[in-house]
Image (cartoon, rainbow, N blue to C red):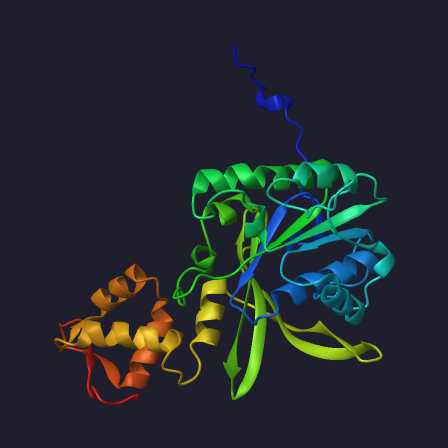
Length: 341
């Protein structure tokens, strides 16, 4: 027999948030982006807010202050500690995963030891946030296989639910995915993003000759799935001879993650970056002469590029959109194949 639960016996409960709209309590949130965006620093800046009950980037004060657990497979504790101090964290509420207890020193393996971490975390006064950097280390098998990712991450999800603790899993973008849906750019199986209730993505580029960084919502099953904040990274002295990096939050940004990232990453004249990929695509489409605008739109979306980005790069290449007579449709053509280089 299978046990069934009738719908009217299910209690309706609101989502609990650490940072309303951006960081749900008791659930997994992914933070992805290309190298150099400062993803770890962003996560630690949010952790600092948790430890002090301070204000989030939108100015809303944290409803609670609590403990933070940090596991990093990439940075030593000293580097993370310097960043947390730079962010103003209450270091008495920060706990670094430093290995397993026992007669012999053993390293902590997030793909194997998550239940042991959950049992230890229950001893803390108020565990509010767990940072796993990178989240792929929690997968015991192949990170590109859906079943293995889901099976390995289930203890992570269970820990969050058991403790009511928000979890931030840090991850990277796959190479060569610029212009595509940001959720699809997350390294490994799509199950990483499927299991996360919310996905944040970070990006950097140049606007008007100045570097610009943003973090935006790319997916949310429990609230708005767009918009975010600009930020800067700055280094400050935290002790004699020791500097730490922190995030300085700037203005809110609006729109979908795909549009925001496409506009940001497309800027510049680099021939080995996102714009170069789109240039190659456009030249291939228009190599044999004019094509209907609807065909270019369909081909662009099929290739994973945002139409507005393709149109902008096409114009820089010397392409133009024209209407063929009174009754004809709109077409795109490359007027000067040598321009834009």
